[in-house]
Every structure is written in structure tokens, then in C-alpha cells.
Image (cartoon, rainbow, N blue to C red; front, side, top):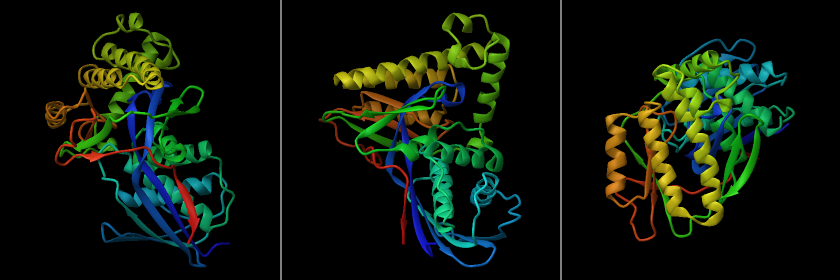
Length: 344
């Protein structure tokens, strides 16, 4: 049993395919360099001692009764509970948690935290490591059941399956993950903070999920993956618009994969713009601060710009042509390796 381990899980940028994961749809995310690191030391007792170094906060609880909490503490307690519920035997450990992916920015800091916690706890306990898809499901349950955000599997899969120079096409019906070269020629992807934080559990994210479920019930479908634009026309607002977004966003993912394979990067920019328009008008997850940030990127020369993540604030993704400098305050993002763990 290793006495000390260090686990890292990256955040992600979703190139295209937003709010499709919990609708059995398609998405094209990639892992980024920024993420969360959890260093774990086995203590030999039956407690978890967790220090959130960036916040200067501490949490201590017993392994056999993690109980409920809020904020970052909910992630730690939830990870312990869900790993135990999956049949993994954990040991007491001291956890140091740090990260450089902005919280509430739409870059999946939550999934990075969940996965880094799970990886560190499993490895320091010398427990059997689940396969990546099983681990994604465990981490998702942490967020669903302990944090209160009804997210899908997009963020967790992107973090676990990330590869340098590649995005991953995810089919959420089959859970097939296909590495996709992210060859942008000399174009660059950047994110720019809108200045508005979001929190999935406290935002309209859960409401949008409920609306999609209501649309499925009215249409007699198991998921919106089977919906069509014609079906959407039979629904009242806002269900009609929610379905239209999911249907057209799935189409945009497929078109983006083709555009990348052909090196048609300008077309990719048009798809990114169309995605944002649908997220703004059909899914209604944008805000005035986000719209101002989109305009700022467009005026700086971006050929595509859209909100990323669950919406209601956070960062905006921009696709910049070769001769356009990175705007002040923006951060260039590139695909990087997925989550991993090392013996410290």
C-alpha cells in the first residue's frame, strides 16, 4: 500500500455539444492543462482529514459516516461515500487539495475535483481501480447526489479520457468515446471570463433538465436523442425551444467533426457561433455579461465565440484566426492529457 500518492484531474473545454449529455446526445470536449491536484497520505486511522489549500479551510470526518456538507466539503464526503458504495475499501487519509482551474467558470472544476479525489483515495487505499467509465459514473454520482447538480457524464469523461492534441467525441447513448484530432492549423482557442460566476446546483441547470424530461414525456420518448425538429413544433414554449437546441446541437457536433477532418476551421467557427445562438435563444442559458464577452471576442477578431459549460455565467470560448492576438484577459487553451495518479 503506498503511503503517499498524488492525483491530478484536468478541467475541460467543450468545443461543441452543450446540454446534450443528459439527453443521450453528442459532445466534443477536450481536457485542458489546468485542473485539480489531490495529495493523499495514509494515516492508519479511520478518518479523512481534508485541507483545501486554496481556501485555507479544513474538514475532518469518519470514514464510516461521512454525513452531509456543502461547498467543497460535499465533494470530499460524497467521494468517500460513493467509493464505499461501489464496494471499495478505503483507509484513513490526509488530503491536500489544490487547483488552478477557475471555479464557476464553465471549465469543469467540479468534475476535476471529484475525479482527483476518487483517484487519490483509491490509490492510497490500494483498492482496485475501476475502469474509466465506471469511475466517471462514480464521480458523477458525487455531483448528483451530494452536491445537488444534476449533471451528465460529459465533464467526467472529458477529464478521464483527455489526450494531447485531441478532443473526444462522446456518444452519450452508447457511451462510445472516440479520440478526434484537434488540428486547428494556426488558429487558436481561448477562453475569456465573463466576470459572472455560476453554480449548477443553484442555477437554472436543474430546471433545464426538468424541461427536457417534460418534453420527452409529452413526446413519448425515452430521450431527446430521438427527437426531431418536426416533433419540437408540436410542443408549447419553452419545451419546443429546448428540444430544438438539443436536436440542432447534436447535428453541429457531427458537422464539427467533419470540419476538423477536412481542415475547414472557418466552418468550425460558424458552428461555434450557431451553438451560442441556440444556447442563448433556444436554451436561454446566457446572461448580459456573457453576451458582452461574446461581443468583445468577436470585435477582437474571433471567427467563433460561445458560452461554455452549464451556462448562466462563466467563461466564453473564442476561436481566433492566425493573425489575431490573444485579447487582454483571455487564456489560450489546448488539449492536454487526462487524469492520472502517481506515487508521491
